[in-house]
Image (cartoon, rainbow, N blue to C red; front, side):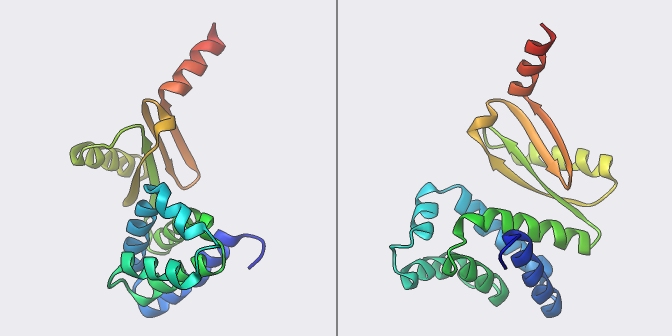
Length: 174
């Protein structure tokens, strides 16, 4: 698995999850773990630090995953154990994209500077579903670099409604 690490891992584990009939469960568990991982610089540091004994890093993964499906535990443990910790968010995103396509859905992510309320998340999801004519599963992420506004990615489509993009466009117009 040398070239496309996220694609290789995602494809292999999607096949396993499909064979076990647990694509949705594994996708949900991976999404929750990835959100916890991306939201905690300390967790990223600890799991990515190869000087920390593998048993300790994998113990943290086991504790965080709790009673997750074996496919989920194996995927995360394999990434951590093989030194591909930093690839985890991309592997999960690729897994979710491929799982969604497999089931006729679309997946994506919404990045904002501050957490969105449940109502805001539901309205954004409804708008995206209306425009794509697909059931959409969105991962909502807080990204301070956004400054203000929203960046939405669904598949290959990126909608950038951020303040930074508007300011850049205004600067170009002037």
